[in-house]
Image (cartoon, rainbow, N blue to C red):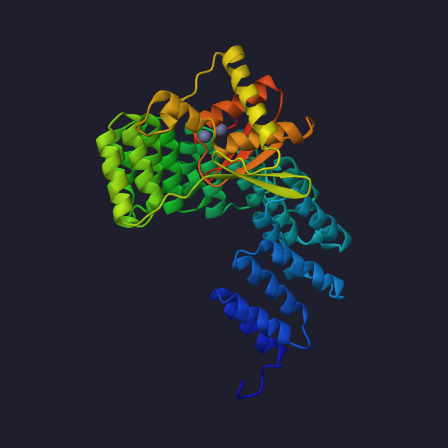
Length: 449
Ligand SMILES: [Zn+2]
Ligand SMILES: [Zn+2]
């Protein structure tokens, strides 16, 4: 202000960016509004600032206004708006931007197409990702790796391996450490133990890529997932570097699945040292105790968590319909169609009991309460409400795509499998860990996540 440079667009753009990063959105907005001559960078910066401050929709609005006042969307604008699309989580918006990318001739830009294929994968549209990938004329290592990552998070392990082999053998593209992280996690997500071990063992000698923390963490996950808990623990002890929270977290996750309270406790203790403020670790250990009926230990861990002032995030599920993202929480009756949704939910439950002889898997409720209360609680999980809503409104030709902020519970997972069988529908649920593709009564994760 003193030097009178607040009309220098470059200076102001940098300031807008700086205030935005510092979380002071109103100062960013004020500078932006007061700037008499805004350039494309000013607009792009504002899009990112909105995104960073959790206002993705305003970011999208900013992108649209920028075009309306005559700016041509450039490379940076598209990269920013693709990130905005991910945060909004709506396939329709992404498709609109995809159309614009084609119109503006940016489909030849590798960075943008790679970001686009990554976006489709994150929105549950793996087929669209692979379409975008196939249209890239000569994909570089980033594009190949992004597609590999898409297969990995969706649990398409065999496709990931085929893709990797094609990439290195046929096209002669060198994989890097990121490629291997996704390849190993693909093996892990699909339970391909031998393949995972093979790549882990050959990555250094054959591809000159030194195993890093991430790779060890994938291997611990892979072995733990397949029930080789001791082997996984052995690998942690052998690691040439300090095991990170990711490594211990992978072991803790495996202990939860296989009900190993002893090893679980050890992993959790290491995690408490490394991440004393991450509530998820406490919940995981408490759940391990509850699942094996050790209620006292479970409540001790929960109390410890409370003492530290850590709160459990509440679960919510999102589903897109009619140009809108619908959000549901547990026991949600706020939706205008709630009567119909609850009726549908009851109907599904009845059908599951009758046709499949299904009993609610109340061990996933993990509270020391009576069985019928447990059943009541579990039947109202947000993803179940979202599934019932999806069945009501989404065309049978389309998959039902749901996003959930936390890990999906075992009972909801079973319900999704049952729906895919009884109603002959495809369901895709993205939880905090990965994607689950349900069809014909089974899931792409093979019941491990
Ligand atoms: Zn559930
Ligand atoms: Zn699954």
